[in-house]
Length: 64
Image 1 (spheres, rainbow, N blue to C red):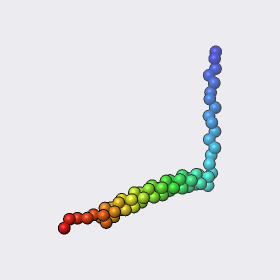
Image 2 (tube, helix red, strand yellow):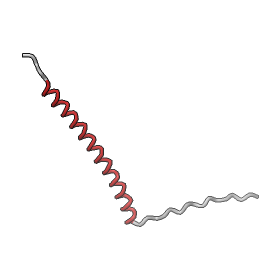
Image 3 (cartoon, rainbow, N blue to C red):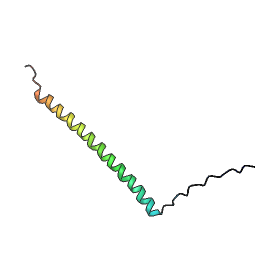
Image 4 (cartoon, rainbow, N blue to C red):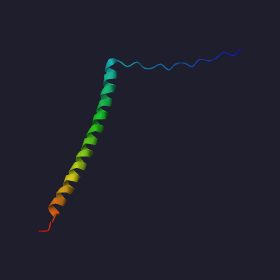
């Protein structure tokens, strides 16, 4: 008779409440950094569009 071997369950390291808070805070900080990068990129796009619009308006020479 062949005995089936049972896989040992990996013991999960139980985090303390403080460790859990630090882990979640780290995630939040990473998310905030991504948000800041996105906001900066959007502001760059807006600034470039406004600059181009100003250029077009300043260089516009209509006929009288």
